[in-house]
Image 1 (spheres, helix red, strand yellow):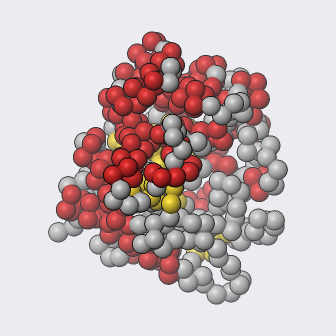
Image 2 (image 1 turned 90 degrees about the vertical axis):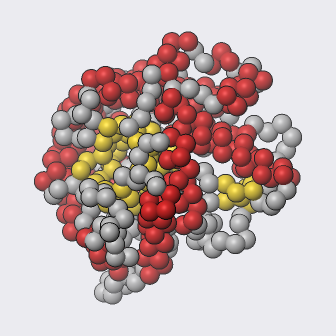
Image 3 (image 1 turned 60 degrees about the vertical axis):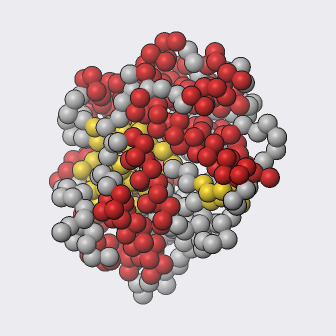
Length: 452
């Protein structure tokens, strides 16, 4: 008896700035990535011009779902001005190409690349103006693509707007205070809720879910304070957002903290009405690794959102890659099961993978057995969550099927099953070269996960 249901999504996830290149082509405006010093964003892997080739590689691997990002500044160069028909046409063609290969499109509206104009003039999501600009943009994309795109996301890894990473992903450059963190978190939530409410009111045939970068954090020891710190961090980093996604309500514990910090005024009455109506059709997540928390390293009176800044400690029982990301398939099963137990909604892991340093000699296939082992173990953990824990899992999307620069612009950190011939400094010919893992993935998808 098959463990995974018919119609299970096998697929690939990416972001626009890490794939498309064509940074200022066909009327695209600059984003905060385009004005950074790394030249890598100008071309990335040039999917803007090579998307048909890449989509065919996906189809040949058995991919039936592609989660891509619409670049806000490609379709609306300033973020709040006129829409750019050439940019919109690119996504229309991309979507048509996916459908023609039997691949379900899944659109994400924001993946950390704020239009530069909104960052410079309004300081990003700290501003009400930017919230309204995002809602306008999101509604426009729905009106353009609802007939072709059945699955939608607003913000990639939305819980990062309640963690220290908020200051590098929201277009904000001001004082890095707890007040600013909570204000941006609130604004991003109201922007998400407005689009989710729009979908459920006017596009009943579509499905929209919330997404978080699930933070599986263990106590570093049996010390009760370590256990308490891990639990509290999980409430602020994971479960508060799950509550907002599914019930439109903040966690009682988070509200209590906000009251103690005199942050109640952030909870604007009109915004909370919008948030209160928020519901999700599924919960999606990224999952890569786990860590532990050592309460003895956390300074007194540290906000729970910031616990890992000082309290994070490597797990001595787990191996890790070169960048310190610890490999933990059992943690993946735990994450899927905890989300389903808490929310009762289908769970959709849409990012999972391992970054490794790889070089191609121009002739021989890259034998990435370590990548096969990583994904084999994580898919097995997912199947255990389905078979033994009763979790309703919609699919499994890797990050990313084809090599792309990391979010920090590092081409050396490769996640793909297909090698792209470029380095951090040189574009070369951008040739796509399947690795050993590509054929393995084809066997997995063709058997619906039965052959690992």
